[in-house]
Each structure stands twice: as structure tokens, then as C-alpha cells.
Length: 96
Image (cartoon, rainbow, N blue to C red):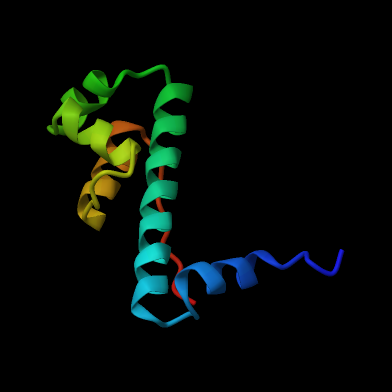
């Protein structure tokens, strides 16, 4: 049991302390991945294909695929468009 470590400790060892460039990059990529997963899960729950969502929002299927797979970062305006216009879901941002 003494060899167990917290998840935060693991992240610190692998990516550095919070606030370092490497850790900030990891945190940013993690959040992009989470947004992509949320987009994919919501789209599938609404029984829409990537192509149908792209048509509803004026984007391309390939772009939605890249978002869902964490390959690109989206602007907030694009995220709003996809969720609110394409999936009829409201987004609220919280600043802490």
C-alpha cells in the first residue's frame, strides 16, 4: 500500500506541477478530449450521424470527427454552434 499514490501525484510526476508549461498543455488537451467525448455521446444519444450534425451546423463531417477524437481544438463559438444549434443543448461556462 505504501507504493500507492494519488492521481494528482501521478500527474505531477509525469507532467510537472500545476502551472508548468507541460502540465498546462496536458490539462488543455484533457479538456479538449472531454469536450469531444461529450459531443460524441450527445450526438449519438440524439441518433445523429456526424454528417447530419455537420449539415445542421454548416460544418464538415471531417471536422466533427476530428473534434470528437481530440485532434483539433475548437473555438468556443463553434462549440456553442454544435451543441446549441445542432444538438439543441444549452452550454453554461463556469469560471472559478
